[in-house]
Length: 419
Image (cartoon, rainbow, N blue to C red; front, side, top):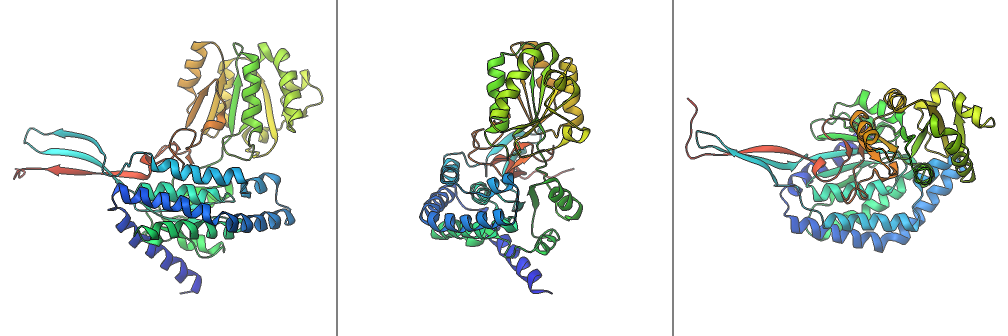
């Protein structure tokens, strides 16, 4: 056995032991742990930020994209969001032990369907150090141990965050290994992790398309995919155009490097001549590169031509595809063809159009007159999120505490036997 393999196995086995203890922890102890974790983060902020700044400088020196560097960077505001997310989880109901439903059978048996933790959750992600704290908070509250493997570029930031969080967990009598990071930035460590189906109950990958594909193809462990976000905003013929422009600017520009940012703007042909020039001008002023269909370019000849590949591309940057469509039907067909079932929005004052869009667009989050940027666990009131699932099983959309549980049946009898 290689030293790397041995290190990964030992780390996962420690997490597995911790999971058994954490599953039995009372709500009060878990909440106290979360408060201690938030306090430990605050104390460690100078050290964590210093390490992160060094990694950001290395990423820039290596020529990594601006979008990647943005995801890697822990600004003061983002650090405070990490702490706030952790504190918000404290206030949420503990799902463990909740009785989902109960019923009685004619033979007198009482059957209860009760929430229980999943067990050990493996998270594989790229760049964003805040994922480390968000996932740790949700897993502790839901009674799960977590094994975290962030990207090599953020390895030291993740280790520093984990060290602070583990101190908080340990201070209230819970095992430090409840929050575990893979002890190596080597890619081979992921291969070992994905083999450990006897110790890890589910893998949740967060990152680019290539990473997701590799994990799905290689894993022996069930995977809940958090795939790319090719998100759309459709501006209907009945839209309030001032509102539509505000939503489009926010959905694309507020933080373009996230999976819930708009990648394609669809515009109804009846309002295209009035709306398209003004929204493109505003987007360009915000630094957005526009790639348009033929009808877009007929109205704005200086727009670059969109290719077929553009319609299904997650740019994660200040680049936007724009298409003029003939009707709501064509907008829905476009989203079905090119979308990733993540987050899609319609801007309209027509209730029947809104109802059709909501009914026929089969995405994890569907919006009426709001930015797609709200697809986020904190914004949804979940405290934080493990990620945004584009799967149907076992969870969909932002994954909070309930999505980190499964259930078991508890059957109460008085001596019944089956005949």
